[in-house]
Length: 576
Ligand code: ADP
Ligand code: MG
Image (cartoon, rainbow, N blue to C red; front, side):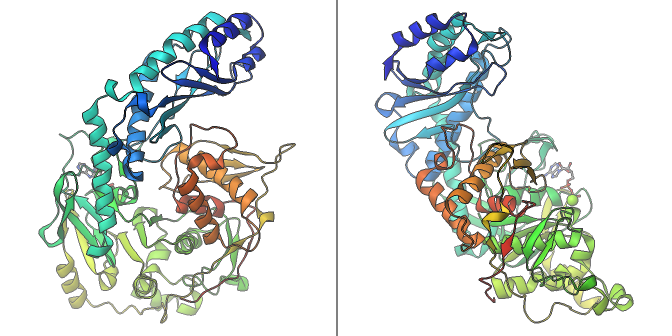
């Protein structure tokens, strides 16, 4: 540990010299109230900015223990601190006075979801913020005075205003923590009540736009109100009694006219696996943590998946118990998405007709009459959805405005009517009885088996040129992995680019540590989750990172499954 006089003298010494001398800054400095660590120094002003951490002892930071006791509260507190830090850093960051990133001060930018992030660590010993700094230069010449101002005035001010409890809005912190805790209480209570999701009365589900995830302003939004038949009550530790619409386990249809809010409801349920920040509108729109959105995704690769529950007898005798392709069709991609979600442990599937392959979803009476079963490889989802429930205990929520055939297989029918949900289960049942369909069920007796695949190390080639392991993130929806590209643009429950960064490095971590040609994909996901639970996100990076957010196992699995070079051995099959 060096004191800040040392920092001053280094900066004076390297002023006006070539950029590379900034490397001399590396190390820990004692500021009295906090310590600062320059962990990584950028090689030039245009390179990704330098990584800095600031640590305040809890004895000085003074956060009351109840704000960070237990993972749910801790993650919410950390999240709230990141947001506050983000805004303050934006205010004090002085850009435009030098070349490239000179003067930048920034912390990971959070989405509407409250997710565990490596940018902030709170525990009973300290509070640590990790952020980046653009070390100032003119051309490639160090601007020592600007750096001095940054390290001795701006950063200390920023730290003083963000990491000490007494300087913060205590009510806001409490609200963040309590809101997450209430949502988590509901999530944990779903199973006991026989539910898979709950949307509380008063929730605001619609978003501002397709590219703006903030809530639609209150005056434009119709607030959610549960229909009496589906109303449930939860006792939340902070908010007290909460009333809302409970979606029971089983098969639930969401029907209704176009533009009446069906997809908006489903979207909230997809994101309901995460907690949301206060004011988001979806704080108490909560679904099971193992809910997975399923969609068609033509063009994706598939590696050795058993899609035979849905697809058999392809032309040219292609094997669907061990199906591989570099260019899946709409229906085969949707089948693979389901089988892979089940393999990773999903217990709730979410489907929207908007993003499904029609021939995967339905095959009506007339089509059955014209194209006989032996000429149609696809067993439509309608014939499998009840078996999913009966054989595997997997529930489905399905947006289906286009086919009443589904009335025969639904336990519940919710109709969205001008953004208001209504329970139309009985009416749909009556209609199903009076307009009987003569379509034949084609699904056989059982759902079929879910294969546990074993990924081979040879299927992950992270090498690129001279680099032994290369993984870089191209936006939320894509990872460059070795010389290949993993397209995650259709993986909708990956909500944050920082999750994508973590996914990329988790794959490298798994490859280094656990992929051995013996362990199944599900076992690999278990190991990754156990390590992340125990050691936090830091365990996957090879240097201190402030830009990871925790992904779920389903999104890690989705990325592995979209590796174009993936190869699997298909053993460890278990019949369900
Ligand atoms: P559907 O899937 O039934 O066709 P969407 O869910 O796509 O309909 O919603 C149609 C439009 O209505 C979207 O622009 C959406 O933002 C808006 N919308 C959805 N729910 C509400 C609501 N509760 N209040 C106001 N607008 C809403
Ligand atoms: Mg829709």
